[in-house]
Image 1 (cartoon, rainbow, N blue to C red):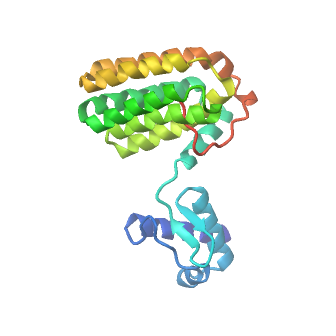
Image 2 (cartoon, helix red, strand yellow):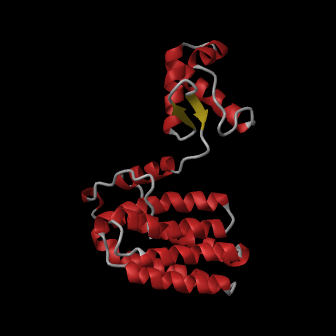
Image 3 (tube, rainbow, N blue to C red):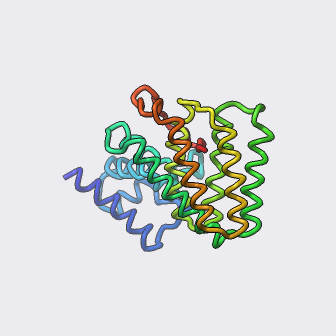
Length: 243
């Protein structure tokens, strides 16, 4: 019965979010108020709220004005799920690379169609910063900086769902790159210069081909070492993204 009540509380809050009664940034009623409204005990409400926090739907803030708030979205939930599935053997590195290539190729095609000069300027600025700071930053910051290029590419595609999916998968790949540390920096920069050229020319096919070829080459550089995932000790790195 307690399990059923817990599920009902979660379902009730999710329903209020879906129908617009609760929006990102809104504060939920207190545990006591929710318990009274839903006719359950406070421990049941507390467990449901923590579960929704783990799912990235809610976030908790401390202080006088704190409490449970509807989240604006958190890609870490998707990233954790993918990482867990890798360790369980349900997803291989080959699968991840293939899926990531499809996402990036589609993003490149859309960016060639929809991207603005400002979008392309942001991509080039990211490349220039990565080159300028190559020898100045630590490995984690370097992976984050270089990987943020794909966040810009997703935005240039003007598809928020695509941005979310790319970012989540890229964070997993970032963890692998941090462990394997392949020598691919020059390879990445050169490919991205060519990609932006194709995007500015509105050449969908060339942009997609560049992304596909680069991902295959990058995969070949790391695959032998990255296959040993059980030795990589992948951990959550909320701000890390990959090349």
